[in-house]
Amino acid sequence: MLFPLNRPARLAVFASGRGSNLDAILSNFPKGHSLASVSLVMSDNADAGALEKALTRGIPAYTFPFPARKKDKDGLGRKAFEREAEHYLEAEQIDLICLAGFMRLFSLEFNERWQGRLLNIHPSLLPEFKGLHPQRQALESKVSEAGCTVHFVDAGVDTGPIILQKRVPVFATDTEESLSVRILEQEHLAYPEAIRLVLEGKAKFEAVL
Ligand code: GRF
Image (cartoon, rainbow, N blue to C red; front, side):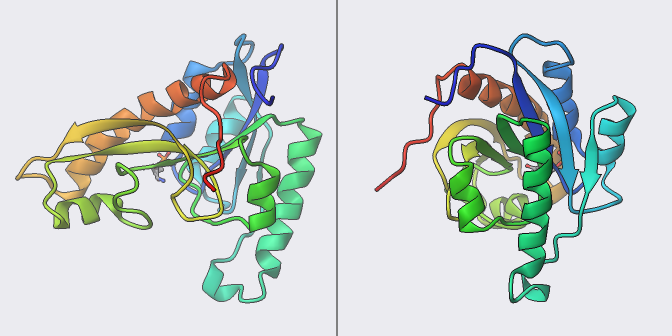
């Protein structure tokens, strides 16, 4: 059994951008929290706001290039990133990885090695609107509800066992931006809640055969 642990869990957050979900995780699990705290931040983008947020709090934060798939046909760039990440994950004795706006896909091997210990947040009510621009997809589909999903990562893109979802209304006057803001507010509640469920052993990865 992976979780619960009989000590505070050490979290890694992987983020490519501004890091507002990282902020939400940090304020729910500050240093010294009995359930968890953030011990590592990693990014593929040297300009990610998430790196600065971590460093100002004294949390180890590293960046390493992770080229997009079309520029990395042989997968060597991805392999190099994963090797670097595994090095820091081991050095920091990480128990759980939280992808928070991390815009790259790991290899099957990486996902399998971290199965049950690798979470992602996606701004749609999965399985609807996987992939890029889910808020735009929601508006184009004229749905009346949207939201966010925290799930375990499996071999697919935005698939994997769902831990929890939060819903918001979609208004006729919504733009992609206004809907994204409404969903993001819920993301900041959903991610810490989902982390708690996993660490307390109340949500587990179950392979769908
Ligand atoms: C969030 O909407 C997240 O769901 C998506 O990318 C965005 C990241 O935002 N995958 P932030 O960097 O956490 O502010």
